[in-house]
Length: 87
Image (cartoon, rainbow, N blue to C red; front, side):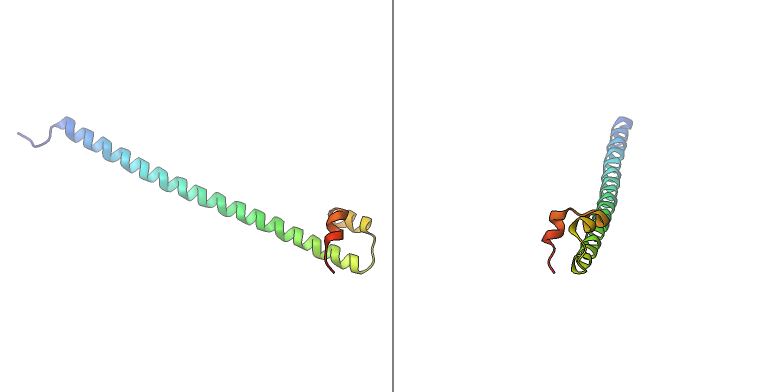
């Protein structure tokens, strides 16, 4: 007589398949999560860089004596944001 019945072998194979599927699913989920995190980080970094550029431009314009209204219109920063910029 065989050590395992066909039904036992089938159950073992199904369990192995389930475990493999779970492992592969987790790996794919982790990979997708990392990709999304990288994309979000890059987007946030670009936004911060653009804001820093606007602030530098606004500060230079402020030093040149341009009005706060003009600086705001050109840079898109609020007048309060411009006032807070340090010379």
